[in-house]
Amino acid sequence: MAKAALPKDFLWGFATASYQIEGAAHEDGRLDSIWDVFCRKPGKIADGSNGDVACDSYHRSGDDIALLQLCGAKAYRFSVAWTRIIPLGGRADPVNPSGLSYYVKLVEDLIAAGIEPVVTLFHWDLPDSLETRYGGLLNRDEFVADFTRYARVVFEALAPKVKYWVTFNEPWCSAILGYSLGQFAPGRTSDRTKNPEGDASTEPWIAGHNLLVAHGSAVQVFRDEFKERFGGQIGMTLNGDYAYPWDPEDPRDVEAAERKLEFSMAWFGDPIYFGKYPESMRQQLGARLPDFSAEEIALVQNSNDFFGMNHYTSNFVRHLDTPPDSTDFVGNVACSFESKDGEIIGPETQSPWLRPNPLGFRRLLNWISDRYGHPTIYVTENGTSVKGENELSVEQIVEDDFRASYFRDYIWALADAYSKDGVDVRGYMAWSLLDNFEWADGYETRFGVCYVDYEGGQRRIPKKSAKVVGKTFNTLIGESN
Ligand code: PNW
Image (cartoon, rainbow, N blue to C red):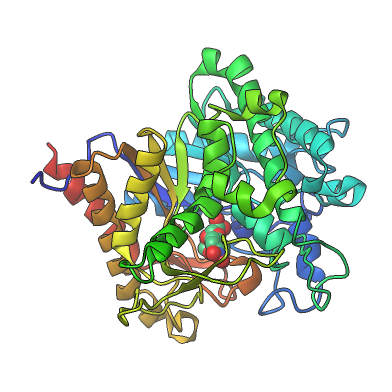
């Protein structure tokens, strides 16, 4: 069997997102996003915090680039805040030049430091005025037109220098956490104890549909107006956990595991690669799942130059004998961390939904590769929190052996998928460069390979895992030469 190895030009580095690190929430013309507004509502964020200051990266991008260099990174994935570029968001609203110049400088500084920028256009921070004006993601015509114009403005400024583009980060999270569970902005749900408005039986599917069409429309602009002149590749980043059957001997559980994968990855992957939603989703959701018009299909099908993949964990999946609830979004299955035989998927972390299982990563890379005809894959996020990390002393936090092993094991699993299984994976960004604002978990949960001392002048200290990511890639890339 071939030895695990990665090619010389393998693109590896670290990822962040605007609202989670930038801070400077009211500076240089930036206006509220739906996350600024969501954080102000009582009870939504575990520690009552928000992204007003975060890691203050808006003022410290030099420090962040120095950290990337120290880690040996070849790439840095960050996201652009729509609210800095077009603070009111809409296609008739003014562009804010100082917002644009922040990102132009960031890109130039990265390139000068020998680091390839990977730019995400939308990592959940929708301009709030679009939410209040017309219902944000739920309004197809308005949202698609406004996102397309925003994308064009960013392409105009950055396409000469940026070669890797992600349209949307994790549409699953926007749709399910934002419109079904109400855990993320805008917080809509059928659960009236959480929010006065929302319909979890329909809105997630509408939001997901509109995200797909907006992605397709932005890709069309990129290909028609920029790609020929400047080159570059564009794709959507999807998140998904791997699904093992709870009882591998029971065909109903095998089917349930497959259905769970379809309800997450294939919800967005199938329209992009096949021009339609998975049959299992159509069957369960019926008319609640929107249909694609011919015009929409023309935008969405074949709109990925690469498959962007975010991955953190795996589940055991068991079939259910009862009919699905109207708010079900997993394909009428039960998910757990324990199999029929009592096998535990992996150790606990600080995030209740996340348990390490590196083999699941290799399996999911293969599942994507097989289903979509061996597309080029860039892993745009992978990482872990550590149980109780925030309670430890700084000296203990930086000795993050748990996270270091997670990365070592997951990166080896990726190398196996590449060199032994023939999966065309060409890049990997660890989540995250920095401890940062972990959405509804606030600052209590840390995901960084660099510690951030939020109260102590924003001091950044690389943890052990920061070195291990680089060391692991250097070993694997070294093997191939
Ligand atoms: C990703 N879940 O989100 C995001 O892209 C990052 O911004 C985030 O910080 C990171 O993962 C760690 O959470 C997810 O509940 C958030 O299954 C929640 C889930 C999955 C991904």
